Image (cartoon, rainbow, N blue to C red; front, side):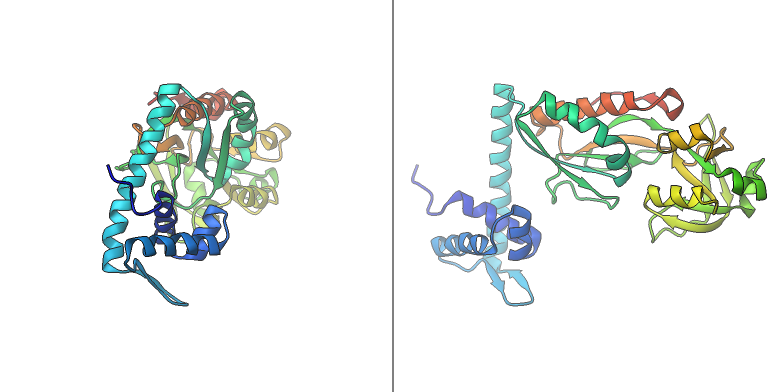
Length: 315
C-alpha cells in the first residue's frame, strides 16, 4: 500500500474548522493557536492540490471539492475512533478523556458529590464537564455521556437512553407566603403566584401535576416568574414571592429547617425521569461505561427514599 500524500492529523483540523464554522472557533475548541489550525488546513490543501475552503473576513464556505472531501474525512475519523475504542476494550484500559454534558441543576447539586470518588478510583481518566440547560448535539459536540431529565414518555431519538430513576419534584412555598395565600387544594393554585422552572421560550401557563399513578392533571395558574435556573427560583420562593417547583432533593435543608413547606405533597410538579444519554452503545469506551455505572449508582444513592421513586433498568 502506497503512503498517503497527506498527514492524517490535518484531516482532524479540517473537520474541526468545518464543524465549528471557523478557524477561531476551532482553535478555541481544540485549545491551540489559530495559526496552527490555519497551517494544518493549508498544508492539507497544498498536499491535495485543491482548495477546500473559501474564506474571507466574514464567511467560511466549503468548496465543491471540500464538501466531498469532508464526507470522507468524517468517515475516516470515525473509523479511527472506533479502532481506538476496540483496542481499549481489548486492553480493558480505563483511560482517556470523557466529555460529559449535564444540566446546571445536576452539576450544582449532585455531580459535585459524585465526581471526586470516580476520579480517585480512575486517576487515568480525565473528565470535561459541560453544564448547560440547552439541548446539545452529542454527535457534533463530541459528548460521550449526557445527564438529562426526560418527559414521562421517552422521546424518539437516535441516542441511546439509559434510565437512572425518577426524581420526585414538588411544589414549595415559604410559611409567610402560605399564611397570606393558603393552598389547600389544586384549584387554589389558580390564584397563586407561580415560580416556574421554564425556559424563556416556553409559554404554557399550566402546572402539569402528576398523581401517584402517574396520571396528569393540568391546572392553570398565574405565572409570576419563569427561569431555567433552580437556584433563582428557590431564592425567590424563600423570599415569599410565590409557589415554586423544585426537585425535593434541591430543598432538603429548607424543608428540614422549615423555611420552605411542601405544598400538596400528593402531587408531583414534573415527571422527573433522569436518564443517561449516549451517542452509541457500540462505541462506548471502558472509561465511559465505568463512568455511566458510577453515575447511576452514586446519583441514586444520594437521593433519599422520599426524593425518588424507583431505580430504573440499566443499559
